[in-house]
Length: 370
Image 1: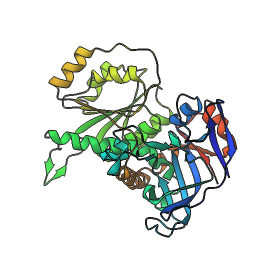
Image 2: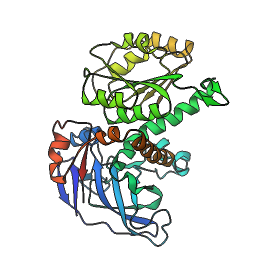
Image 3: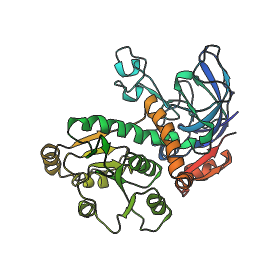
Image 4: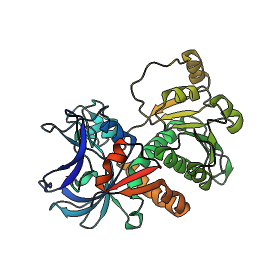
C-alpha cells in the first residue's frame, strides 16, 4: 500500500510503499482510509520542527485528522462492524501503571508525557491506504456525515475546551437569566482569535452553545471567512480595523477567549482585555521564537481581582469525539453551506507536495487515500 511519510534523518517527505497491515489481535479493526485532513501540525512535521517515527523505523507516516471505513474486524470486536464509517482517536496511553489518566482511558491528560500519537509521536498516522488499530479507539460516524466527517477531529479541540469551560465556570453563578429554567439568548460573549479551521469550528461550537460570538482575524471584510462567520450568526472583526484594546468597547465584557492562532504575541496582548470572571482557552502551540515582553503585573492583577482562569487544551478523549460527531451533525443541519465551505478541496495523494510543503490556500484541504 501507499502512505505519505517524513524521513527526519534525511529531511525528506514523500509517498512511500508499505506492507499492508493485518489484524493481529482479537479486538483489532482494519480500516480502509478514505481521507485525511491537512493541518498546521502536519506542515510543521514536514518542516521537521518535530515528529517522531515509531521505534525501529526511520519514517513516520503522518496524518491525524481522518475518516476510514471498516473492512475487517477481529473476533472479539463489538464496537464497530464491517462497512461502518469511523474517525479514529489520535493519542495512545503511556505504559506506566502510576499514570492514573492513561489507566482511566484519559490519555489526553497523560501525566508522564510518554504517550504516543498517531501521525505525530511514535506511531504511524492515517495518511495511508489501510490502518489497523484497536476497536477502543474507533468512533462510529453516521453515513449522512460522510462528506464532512473529516472535520470531527479538529472540532474535538473546541469540544474538549468547552467541556472544561463549563466545568470551571461552575465555580460562580454563570447561568443565563430566563424563565422556568430556559436560558436567555446570548448572555455570554466569546471572542475567537483566528479564522482557520480550528477557529471557525470553535466559533460554530460557541454559537451552538448560545454565546454571542466574535471572530478576530487579520483580513478585512468582506472575504470568504468573514462571509462564513456572518452566515452562522457570529460577528467578524478585522485586526486591521480594531486593535485588541478596542475590542471590549465593541464587544462588552469578554466572558471567553478561544485562542486558535498559535500567536503568543496576540494572545498575551488579548489577555489584558479578558473580562471579569472570564476564562481564556489556549489551543495553539507556537513555534520556538525569541522572547516577547509581557506585562506580568497587569496579568497577575487581572487574574486575581477579576477572578479569571486560563486553561490549555490539547488532544481529546472519547467524550470529545462523540460530542464532535454529534455537533458536526447539528452544524450540518443548521448551516449546511457554511460547513461544506470549510472544506476547500479534496486532492489525490500525489498532490501532497503543494498541500504539505507549499502555501496552499483555503480553509481545510483534504487528501483522498482510496
